[in-house]
Length: 135
Image 1 (tube, rainbow, N blue to C red):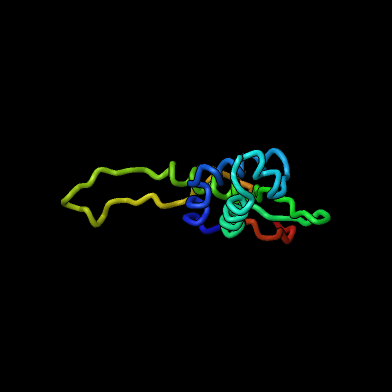
Image 2 (cartoon, helix red, strand yellow):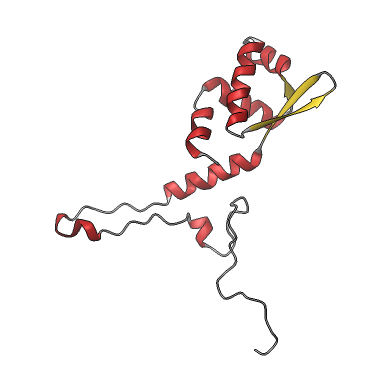
């Protein structure tokens, strides 16, 4: 997931409204246009940005393309925000500024045994190799 691309995509009020609507129901461009009170062309442009950020995808149903939210991307975004919120700040000590600890690790959720199921990494604890039955 490209974090900045996703954040920019949802930073627009109309696109955020589209996401909220699509979380509740799949819609085509025409239905979104009517519900939002904007042109179909404007909705199409917003959907293009959302698709590029992997926030929505479309499925053809007959003549119309129906759009839905890629919830995996939203879950990844949530994990990134949790990670950002868990960074610890430290006061600058000018005498040893080069030695200041920087907590740029994973979010609290990922440091626990039961981590965020939406993170793409493998979170098996170290030393969890297959047992040979000798222990």
